Length: 210
Image (tube, rainbow, N blue to C red; front, side):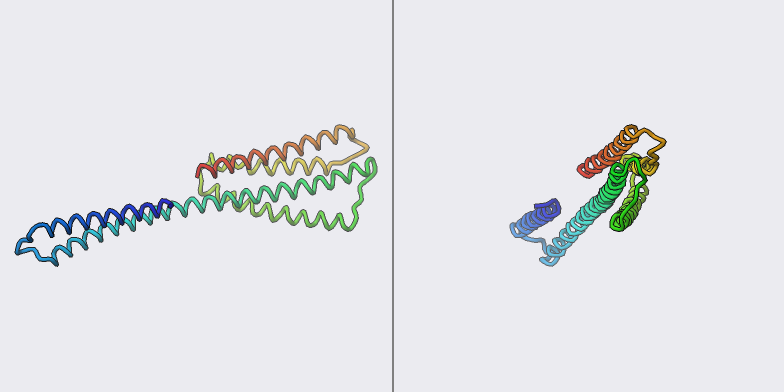
């Protein structure tokens, strides 16, 4: 039994009990001549109308609260989905490019038609995920306190992802140390993963409190 059902049950039971008590009191005693049974029914009707109004207000408050909770969950769920899709697309694309660089080192990198199509698909998925993530974040930023939007680390996530892509794209085999290059890519990839995990934990923690 949820809260709404419990509220209805309590109020309805209270109305029945109160009605029974009032009717019993009237039946136990002779009514004065100036009070008719219709006056009694009218009084009971007024009481029940008042209780009905209280019940309506209670239901409205409950429904409004539940709508706010659901709206909040929808926003944060959309953002959560967006950052997951964005992270996966970025990492898969970067890993593909990085693997290709290692495979061809120290020569220039060439891509097959399949790889070019795959990069194009990942770029499209990255854009869609970014749009979802950005749209959800904008709504959260407008509707919630600054401290909540800061937990989502939107700018940090984008910075970490862009830094990784730039580091991979700056491949210059004859000008940089290979081991240094590999270590740098590994470090920046770990930063991306760590930033996204922290953000996901923050979202889960906040959702549990709603």
